Length: 245
Image (cartoon, rainbow, N blue to C red; front, side):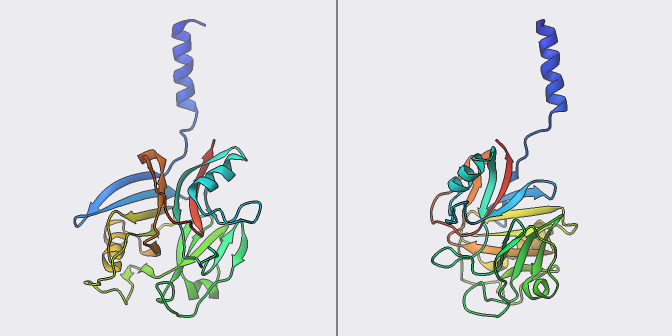
């Protein structure tokens, strides 16, 4: 094969082979507050992870990636995805691979999870964020689902309990879904932020009519495309984008 023929072959391969899937992650500012936003589309392989094949809680991005490696896959993006108890069992609904692992909770209660309305992030043919009681009344088809709370945006409105000058500030993370259900926006704040401002980012900047809070203080992100791999607390449910190894 001549050099020119080899170059033509390489160029042809580049044109016909699909690009590796990845989350489109970027840093941005909103009202002098830094955030990192990662976009995933519904045609990508987004999953929820909690326990491994041995039944033990995975708990970290590294262990999720290790489990995927056994099947020739790898983790492209990940984030903690819902509140959990001391033993890292999910507080509310968790569905993985179409199987309900923990039941939905629709009663109010203490803490941010019980600050109704809370909601469920559903991964099906498309993405959706659904208020928990509406989800319980008419569950959509979800291959994966995780419940958390509070809702950040509900049909284009902020959660009614959020205060503009609220003094509860943490590094927070959450997810919002585009109106057509084709894109999920995963966001983590770069500095401590209150619920009101965090919700406004989803509603006013990302234009997601429905968005869900995942957690605060323990918020972590894995985004190798921007050279980020947060360490810290062991986690409960983890949302992650999967690609071929």
